[in-house]
Amino acid sequence: MAKARQQEAWEFFGGLLKERRESAALSQTELGARVFVSGAYIGLFEQGIRKPQLDVAKRIDEVLQTGGIFERTCRSLINKSPYADYFHEVAELEKLATKICEYAPTVVPGLLQTEEYARAVTIAANPFATEEYVEEKVSSRIERAAILKDATRPEYWVVLHENAVRAPVGGPAVMAAQVEHIARLMRERAVLVALVPRTAGAHASMDGSLRLMEFEDQPPTAYTETSFSGTLLDDPAVVKRAQRAYDLLRVAALSPEASLALIESAAEDFRRCASTT
Image (cartoon, rainbow, N blue to C red; front, top):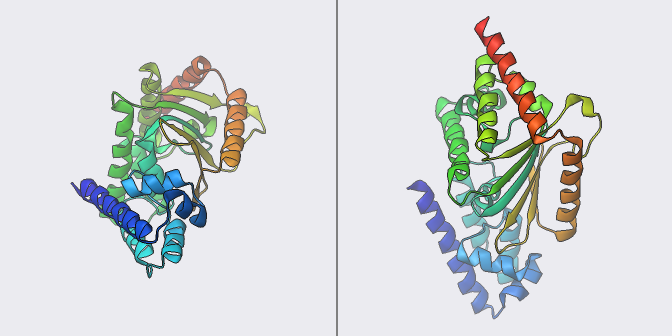
C-alpha cells in the first residue's frame, strides 16, 4: 500500500511537471535540452515511469522558475524510499528492465541475497542501527528479488568474483544457505552466473560493482557503486564503455558449468564448517 501511495505521488510530480512545462510553452525536447536530459526522459518523468535524480529536479526548478517545488517534492519522495538516495531510481528501473547484467567483486548482489545474508550485511554496515531500520532494509531487499519470480522476469546475468562466495558473511551457516541459494537459482535457470576466480589476477572493473540494464522502449543505463555512493549513467558513450568492461569481465570468468561446480564446492565447505562449530 505504501509503495502504491508513493507511485501516486510520483505520478502527481509528473502531472505537475507537464502542467508547468506547457505553461512555459516548452516541448519535452526543449525542456530536456535545458536540463541536460533527453526529451524522452522528460516524457517518462511526466508519466511517473522514471524518477528524476535530485540534480535534475533542481535544474527543472531553475528553468521553469518554480521556486524549488520540484526539488522539495523530489527530496520528500526520496526520503520516504527505503533505499539510499543514489539507489532509489535504480530500484525502480529494475522493475522495467528486460535484461540486467551485474558484476559484484566482494558482496553477493541484492537480488541474490537471502534474508539472513542481507541482515548480516546491513548490520555490518550499520552496527548501531535500530532493529526497525535493519528489518526495513532487509525486507525491501528481499522484495526487490521478487522480480526473478515473475513470469516476465528479466534476463539476469551475474559475474561474481570468487571472494563474494568465499567471505563468511554472517558465519558458515548463513553463507552455506546463501551460496546454496545462488546454486539453486542457477539450476532453475533463473540467473546465469559466472565466477571470476581468485587466480584470474587483474581484470576490468576491479574498484566497485557494475550493473547494466536494458529496456523495451528506453535506452540502456549503467550503474556503478562503491561503498558510499552510486552513479546512474545514461550517456550512450559511457554506457558503451561500461558494456565493454562487462564483456572483459565475462572473458575473465569461468564458464557457467565450472562456476556452478565451484559454488557448490563453496557451499559444501561452509556446511562442513558450520557442522563443526
